[in-house]
Amino acid sequence: MLEMKNIVKDYSGFKAVDNVNFSMHKGEIVAIIGPSGSGKSTLLRCINGLNSITSGQIELKGTTGMVFQHFNLFPHMTCAENITYAPIKVKKEKKENAYEEANKLLKMVGLESKANVYPAHLSGGQKQRIAIARALAMKPDIMLFDEPTSALDPEITGEVLNVMKLLAKEHTTMIVVTHEMGFAKEVADRVIFMDGGVIVEEGTPKEIFDNPENERLISFLGSMLRA
Image 1 (cartoon, one colour):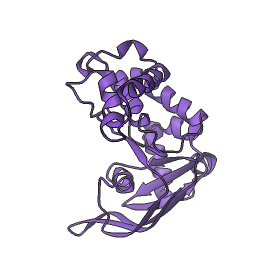
Image 2 (image 1 turned 180 degrees about the vertical axis):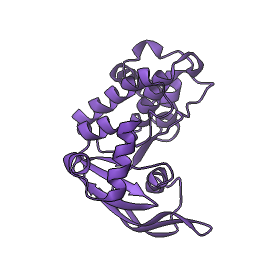
Image 3 (image 1 turned 90 degrees about the vertical axis):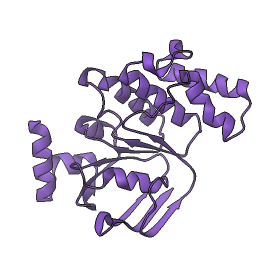
Image 4 (image 1 turned 180 degrees about the horizontal axis):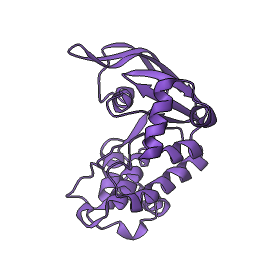
């Protein structure tokens, strides 16, 4: 479904992504972990075209939906309007069909009662769940999550992770940049560890978390466990 060959993203001599090769299949869930500044989010943004690549080749069979760290909801629109805006404007869906789908998505993320509420009246966890529903409304082939819980208080992080676990059970193709090691271990089919713009190690959750081989990965996991 996705293949990235020799991807480089260079910012005036600084390679945020340095010769990365990566591929995934339909229905696969890949978690990308690593320290801040390791190139995780840049790689994600290269996949959906928010960042242009300096060199390399990306082959994508389908479309992507993106869930950002800081929600990026339209503040002047209700939750239902946020979810239906792109399907109506971009895909030219009929308004009634778009709102019918929005209601289904709101129910799925547990916020059916918030259809006519504005983002300012939502908690962080609720905003992120609306952002997930908005991305799903476009029926993307791959869902991209860029540290979706990092801006949330710990007590409401579970709200968002539970929705993502539900998507995983439905075999939604997902790439998740995350600092939630427990989520990566439980849900991902494959875990990638990035550092310095390169993929240092990848494998199954068991391989990465129980039997890490690279010293940098061992150090990173140790620091996460101490945090």
